[in-house]
Image 1 (tube, rainbow, N blue to C red):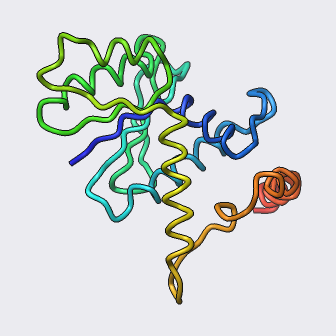
Image 2: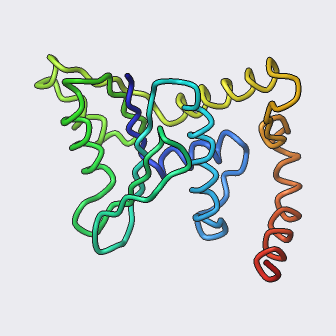
Length: 183
């Protein structure tokens, strides 16, 4: 089994960039974007024996595990005392003897720590955030193109060009705001 240890915000910003939505951090709804990323990861891992552990930095007082969208995606939020990078390092070290571990991050310091030469006996596979996002988007595109018939779920947003998505964002946001007030 392969375990993907995912630097949450690093991959989230790579996804936004790939979609042409490189919005500033102040203008985005982080909770919605985190949820969207976790949903996409759950779709990506579905039907495989792989699993993903997504770790986000947080200003919470203690480490917190959040119930996730699927059986093969776990979500954690770091804490004041333990950053996302520190959690990824520990989990990679713990799992590397028994499972194939892929650390997904473009953070140079994290890569240098996790891929230390002293750990050659139990190597960890490295994937940049941009590389992982490209693979995830390509897999979604392939699934959408090859799947047909009743009961096949397809996400419209996976098939729309980035410029159309960006023009539709204000409409989606206003509809979600209305739903929040009336729901």
